[in-house]
Length: 342
Image (cartoon, rainbow, N blue to C red; front, top):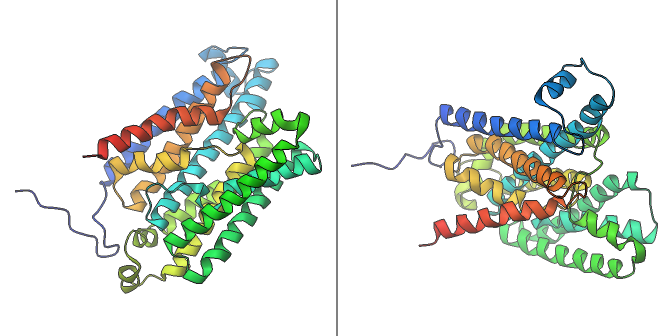
């Protein structure tokens, strides 16, 4: 007769998969990302053969091919990796902290706040496009701060965080709609940004999001044991030595920073933070120390694959990235729901 796995004394949770399972998952995801990257760098209006691509990456070729790969396609692919990893981590943090499997990075209002700030800046002041990432990050941080303020009285309980985030999101979304009605000729550009995308992203955008993505991954992994406590009821977590309110505030702040940086670079890309944690949970369980690196890699794969499809399927016209994250994430999420429905 089989027996259930015993809880870990440090987390109160059943242990996750073994280290070889984690290594195998990371290896498989790494191979899939590498294959997607090879296609992203070689496919386009000017296709490159595998030999030409290797020559460019080795630095043995100059000219148009080198510019095409090193200045246009490669930074865009790296930006997609970082955006996807950040959104996946943010989704994992939010679903764990709120104990809500339907939570997404936008639950704190950060996505709607960033969108509102960008739309208001473009319609009201017609700011230069180079300022949009910084404006988006400020708007997202402001919306998250308002959510924190509303939820502070309850000690940042999961329910109040969700309700406050919904209220802030509804307010910001209403303002976005109102400003779009008066945007005139700018409406098409703004709708394109609101659909999300990586078109025109370069090394400057990579440098903008890299510290947030790398720092978020390091902090998440370093505090994985404490994040495991967030799965438990608050009273149980406190009995195991966790400062629940401070931990919840810290992890939500980290999720907000990751989301704001992603939205600032790629716009409001949906479904990644919702679906990546669910896919990983099927194989990695609930131990955050096992799940977090897999979630980051899964998010990176979903975004880069979606961007490849957005860039190539209707070439030379480019489709919105958010369209493909929804087309990939939506059916996956429906399949997950059906698989868990008795």
